[in-house]
Image (cartoon, one colour):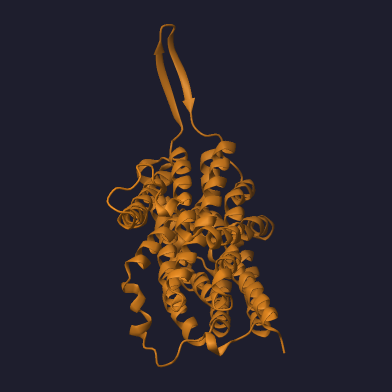
Length: 427
């Protein structure tokens, strides 16, 4: 019989691998959507909707899937979930009309709900001191978006875009069988059948849950949105080929996914608040710079008119994106450390609702990107939007956590604190 350590390693390894593959499927329209857009003559808004439709289902399914995982266990739920997506993924290769892709995309999007299943499944196999790191390793499956960036363009060029869903369907089927054979179930991790749905949903009344939803809609929703949009952005803004654009986009996508484990470790060591606070500030600065559109200026000097061109070249742009990706990678882990620390008995339902809002961010943002681009014609308007939602997170965090901690620190130390006292949250 396998030891507890072997079971932990097997569950963590296979859950992370399965989630990586599911995430690759979830964002495949980021690549195959480009030739489909040209084939069907879609607008920017229609492309945004096409790319993000799977994200909608993945988001909405996370809460019920998290609840099912709490009740029945991650092994059975994860396996059934993967099997349910195989046929819709394959059928995309036979789609010919825009509505075909949208309808099938809704079914394929269930693959994105695998996050809520895996995060709850894994968290219960590890002690509180190691949960952040374990969940961070699992969350590194976000790097599945990079698999799509590496693999899908080559398949599109060599065999046509129809080959991508066929390859993914076979891969998901094999993964489901391997997952079922080599993972484990622990009955003690499952919620009692006597617990009602209403009781399961009780934590959603806590204001902290909704704050974490907003944070995650930025760090994860923004990550998904840019994963879907960046290849197209590089093509439109810098005139790159689809292969080159997809490859450079992985500079943002791959590190942001892989670094999540380190974010979990830092959250275990320094606390979820401290990590999330600096994540938001770092992203805020970079997004401000990324928001600035290419500008040609004419300045009147004593020697006559002079022309100036302002804007980010492809290398500076990519460097800033890399920093944003690293910050968001830490943030994706730190938000779930909040959940594991504050709601240890309700990880499935709370991670489900937080993951739902993160996924909704990943769905709504690309659609809004398309609308902004259609209205303004400015590519960098997408970063203006991300900058705005990051401002909201910083303000909410300040008033709900930083200022509140400062208030209690002053109350505990008396009416006249030292003028240079450091708030508890920043020590």
